[in-house]
Length: 450
Image (cartoon, rainbow, N blue to C red):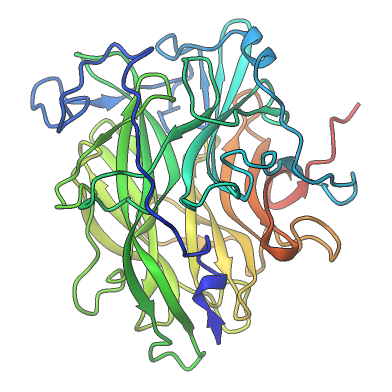
């Protein structure tokens, strides 16, 4: 029997934290109290911004080129941000693949980090990488996850902030839990995807899809599967949305659910009746957005990934489950979760990197393929494309939360950012690179090759 608390992170003992949203500074958007960014306006419907000058690259491309609506920070920005050393030294062998460690003691991300959402923006004279991620502090009695931002010139060496973001070129905490007692995200929040959107009324804005946790508990039972199943209690989660003009100062967009969430769980014995997590939105066309999310199918006894569809990115219609657990003895026998879906610029097909859970609770990363991104997802391999490292390394307990990036200047090169878990549950964010265009083999980052 696998304990759910060992599979669904973090440790589930959060305390409500008051939230202060900074809606000033760089933003020129006029927000109203209930509907920031006026998402429900029928005139000037929001549509995706094509962030690249190359055809076929939509707002979900992890690499965006020459989009003047996205303001790139100047290089001096990194000079006043600390490339923070880890709160415990790691040897070069021990840290193979590690590109982002825990923050220093008592910083907002000193106890845990994860959920990396990485984007690359290319300007005329420079490139800039952004990584939104969740963090938790070991120095605060309010043990809630917050969402923060780190920045980089190459996607490998990252500059971070130790506290709340204050200015437009800053890094650090960008979004905290809601302080509204009725909200779905009072206990913890984690980023899932960033989409660039625009409208005739506004310049380009960032849309952040995230998972929010409340203090309501749900119980995962073994179910009817003869495999045994997963058992435990977790906090209920639902998907949320926030918008920003600079990626740092955010305002929540309330969905139709009474808690402000975009979707509710299923009813009765539906596969997603317990929770909804990891909402990753992908833009297929100007009026066709798909959301991939995961839940736990009690009847089948495994984690599964489903899909919802939307015309405006706010109101969603569920289409059902698209992928469940693997075969007996496989690396994803107990299910799949934390999907990252990208459209391959080479052939237009959809790739899904996902976190697979084995019978003993070990997490690895697999890849599936679909012609249309809606159905008929097929695993490229029955084995994982990326698995935990050897016994003595930092990510030897599990790897997951994949973020897959196809490089703009070389469509045969892929980067895989991921969360690694090591001894004692210590987390870090790592990076691996593909062996050419072969996305069934990734090797951990080990430095620039001369």
